[in-house]
Image (cartoon, rainbow, N blue to C red; front, side):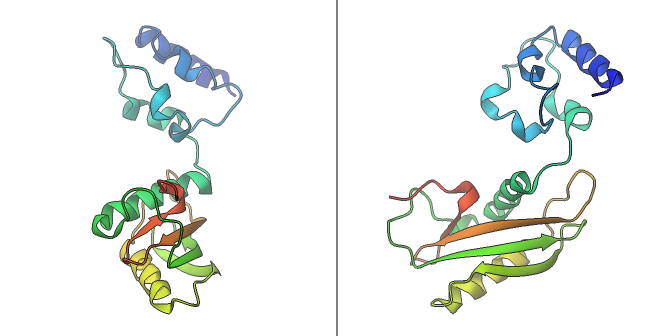
Length: 171
């Protein structure tokens, strides 16, 4: 950790009236991603609050494939609201598929590779691949690097799905 970075954080904390001290207390030993803050750790907006989006360029490091997976799942959900299964999934599902997605630095799909293909339901495989391709371009990472991540698709007999990274659970 460089001292200019510590000075920047100290200045920001002072400007915010000290309200961000708890939020930045982990900065010395850990990952500096905005996603690691979590909604429950972000303080309420007291007078003099600095907008988190303003701070992002200064505190965000490259995100991990696991963090990107959540971002990509949110992107897929946003584009497919009518296909997302709402609530807890029932105990018996039509299919479960695990696919590795390789994206270019511009968010385009470079490759799809099945880790666990639902071979008993080829129509589900086709629908998953179609949905993944239709969602491109995906969000670009901070530095525009390529990303490889794995997502598990939980497929209900109604034709709706949940992604493991955003699932509401299963009965």
